[in-house]
Length: 146
Image (cartoon, rainbow, N blue to C red):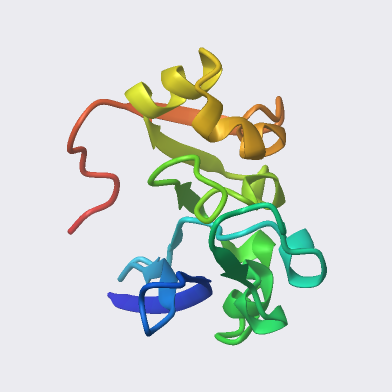
């Protein structure tokens, strides 16, 4: 099994001296499956970062999830499963790039978004995409051997 850790952008807060990275992960199982955990900021943030926020979001071209996975020789079609930790813009900004596979999310997170929680409005075009096949889970679940 291999674990890749990606930086998918970072936040800059005026009162914190260092930028705070946004992580993403790729797990390659011993069976050859590629499991992506979180998809990072939307591609549009590279050229048009939102300006109205109280803190800056910085996304360089190499931070875009498709560029990160290409660094290890993969394309979107090579991903076998997506796990999204939550629907914030820095974690779920590219779910629609992976409509060809199942996406796992906690049921409580999905239901909060569907109920209209304002925190997830900025990624609604991603998690509310009819082409995404969600598997809703409750708590800890083994998704692959090991």
